[in-house]
Image (cartoon, rainbow, N blue to C red):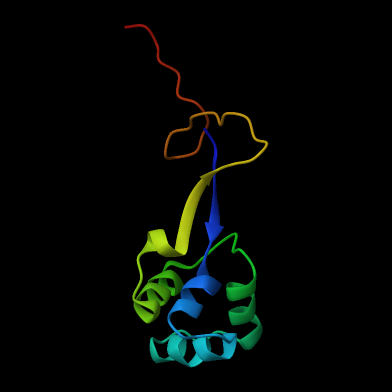
Length: 98
């Protein structure tokens, strides 16, 4: 089964009383993360394809939330089963007879 995700940053921010992307930027800066206003806007308004783990950990700290509240795994729509690959990503492993 292939997985996708839903990004709930805007919703979690609203529950915590943060309604504007400008509210988030100084809180990230307090944690040593200097993001431009456009980067913060994209982080809130769009679903990120890649996310720096330092940014993720800062968001969890700022919002006092869990990863499950911020990122919801869901089955991917319209995708077939994904081929299993080893952690190295070099393709399927081949078992050879002993």
